Structures are given as C-alpha cells and as structure tokens.
Image (tube, rainbow, N blue to C red; front, side, top):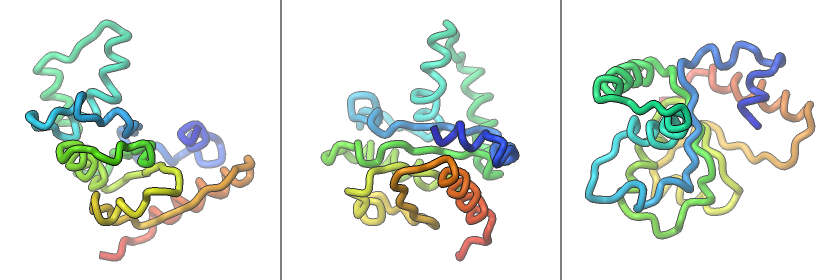
Length: 165
C-alpha cells in the first residue's frame, strides 16, 4: 500500500533517488530458512526474500556469475545510499529468534535508508536487542487520502534533512 502511494502524482520523484527498493517480511526470517550453521549476508536475504519468488515464477535461476554481478551492483548501490529497505512486520518476529536471525535483522537495520513497519508493541527491543538507532519514529493510526499525502511528504522531507552524527 505504501509503495503505491509513494508512486502517486503527489510525490512523483521520490523513488527516482533509489536504484532498488526491497520489502523484506520479517516473518520469513526463521531459523529454518536461515540456519545458524550458515553465514548469510544482506544480499542473500534480499535474493531469497525478494528476488527468488519472482525468478522462480519465471523459471529463471541466478547463476554464480549472475549472483556475483548482482552482489557487485548491490554493494555499489548500498554505498551510494541508493537502496531503500522496507523491513515489514517487526511485531511478527518470534520472541525466541536465534542469534543468526537476530544478527540478520541487525545487519538489515544498519542500511542507511530503512523503513521499519510494526504494530506499536514490542518496540522496546529495537534499541536494546537489535541496536536500531532510528532518526524518525512515527505512529500511524488510520489514514485518509489527505493523511497519506501529508505523511509521505513529511517523511521524505525529514529524510533530506542533515543527520545528527
């Protein structure tokens, strides 16, 4: 829903600043999908959660060469802050996530451009357990079309302000 509104005429240039926008549903980051005995990187999570379902439907699978090209492009885009991660459903994370899953979430939260969605409970873990240092915290309660337009405009105006280091 949010991405559709970001692409609306009210803010047509917003997504132009990003080369890639990925939505990662946190409910999928489970020990079964990301076992502790394997090392995972951000590109592995994005490939598995965002790209693999699309590629699978088309019958295409990434070769090792394709993966290397993708990883190089991804690293460059991340360095240039051209990736937006929408990390969806923090409140849907199991309370007993293993250390590998916790480390994956920490890694994803350290991207320069992150939107994290959650219901308003269990947010105390963000700072302590996941070491998340957000710049902006918004609570959204029911939206009209005017509310949506106002929120999107204000959110991205705040993103363009200099960060306090």
